[in-house]
Length: 484
Image (cartoon, rainbow, N blue to C red):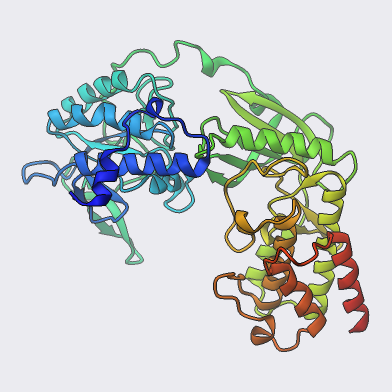
């Protein structure tokens, strides 16, 4: 046995056997444990590289049927898997799971692999309809003590169950549409191939064999009237991901109704190693905005908040405008240097206002800066903000716009680094990479030297360099603007 495997075998199977306080220690512990479980129960590498299989499919097994999905949070995945994997192996049922817990986090996020994949931790392939129904009941009983994450577009076996089901292909089956595009397919009862609709659990040409399960609505939760039915009429989703959705809605509390934003924080949605979930983040934004608005009026106004089915909803002002990110995507040319300077001064002043109010924004990026009809900027998205004198409670970073934690030499470091990264992006059209930095002058020759120096100084990690305030930087930028 090599040294790596020896260390893996020393990882305890139960979290109660060890004490973990830091997020990185927790991540390492669970990752090693998952590696060990994969070696034991998932020896086969699937064609899709993110999955591992319990075994290869057998020649007589079907290519389609009722699939069972079992959901789990990042923190419970190992415990849940260890409870059901031996059972499935004993029944000789083929199943698959992600190759790593990092992949599971991305699946539950819903951005990298698609929103319809959220919650699909383990996929089970029963050989027959009868076996699928039997397995659903047994797996529900085995996983009843665990937290459930909803699988979009699947049917849930029972309320709060971790077991979900849908009819679909077990192997890759494709058809061509009228444009020659390949689409996933299943075989209809008549024998011809039809589209395998990922957004429909039970095809209209099949009956649901799980209908004999216990009553779904024992708690009468579906009969509860919520503000989403009476007060706020959702028009469309802006974003939809594991931690929750962001929606444009009509606020019917006033006449005439006004547009508003309804932000949803799902309980257990995108649980991270530190235990934070969608509920925590949106509730945090509610608290931050209410406090910030006392001093700085350009952040979105909070209208109300409420809870539905354990999820937290924040209702706030609809800020009219396009984000700098969207404007950059639609432009054929970069912004003029003069326009970038105008934006840079405004962003620096926004950050200064936030700091003056006692907060760290912690998410300054082009997507969170809206250009209003009068061409001024307004900041949005304060889920990850925290008080200046508080230790940073969030472990995630936005690629290209966040400073590494080990190089944050003051409470303001990340916001000031983000300011430099945003201006660098607006000037060059490229994300700044601290590992292979490229000088602004090498990407755009027309940028004045003083502006290059200000931006590049913001991006350089140096403990010895005096930390300027955002307000001081805005004044330096104004001096450059006056000279051109």
